[in-house]
Length: 115
Length: 111
Image 1 (cartoon, rainbow over the protein chains, first blue to last red):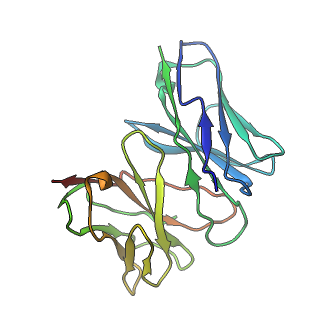
Image 2 (image 1 turned 120 degrees about the vertical axis):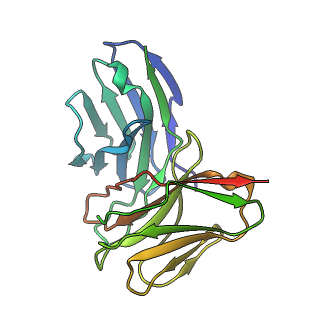
């Protein structure tokens, strides 16, 4: 079974621009979660989508948004980029079912650099 | 989700067993103990998880104490490719699929 894929793998943008990152989950998985990883803050949860609906959201400003399509693929968008948005952006997929355990599998990440 | 405590770093000689401890004294009855690892700048890799019983898979073994307040991840024959940050996470899927990562343990495997 193919793993979680993320595109692009690397991205360089300048302050004020916007960016869209893409994530394709493992086949059959309906939940996609997004995380940001920086050296200072570590791995932090951004938001989670399940069946095209945002189900949970972390403590990030409104510049960070996302969506999910009917095939469970997800995109996240960051508008008005700031230098501090430079990070590794990770997505993880799982079945998303309401059972006690539901393992999340991560993609390789997108390295965003804001100049 | 339970707060977990891990040593910031550990060393291991190649070929020896690596035993990574994790304290999770506030873990609740329905929370699983999950282990992930992250090799530099890659996405976290799922290793293993367990609730009460010891678990083993092709990557590692997980030993959970009877009171579930701590656990140990065992890599039986560490290789240089096992050098990574290892995260121990207490996780209960409440329908919101959110993992809370701490700082983890940096395991350095040396020749």
